[in-house]
Picture 1 (cartoon, helix red, strand yellow):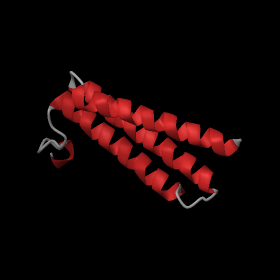
Picture 2 (cartoon, helix red, strand yellow):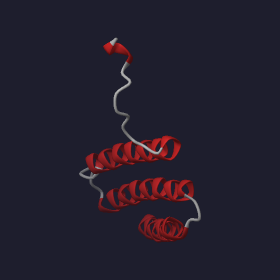
Picture 3 (spheres, helix red, strand yellow):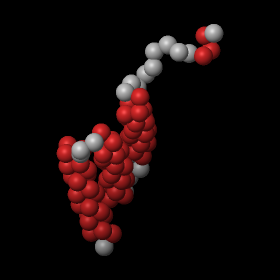
Picture 4 (cartoon, one colour):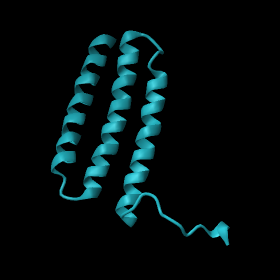
Length: 97
């Protein structure tokens, strides 16, 4: 029974990733694309977690953590890019004065 439910969860997550890929490619605004990319990262985390449960192993936990960190950093950098049209600012350090 649990195996069947995990298979259904994998299919639902795969459909969610496909829907987000569509929004990523067709999104009318940059913020729609960033939200879709963030959601893909979260779906990917869940997909790997379900695979880990299905295979009854804890070997994928490190992968989940790395993807979570990269998703957070990527979303933050892209949001900053939308806000200021730059990720890194040059000069302007207050502690140099």
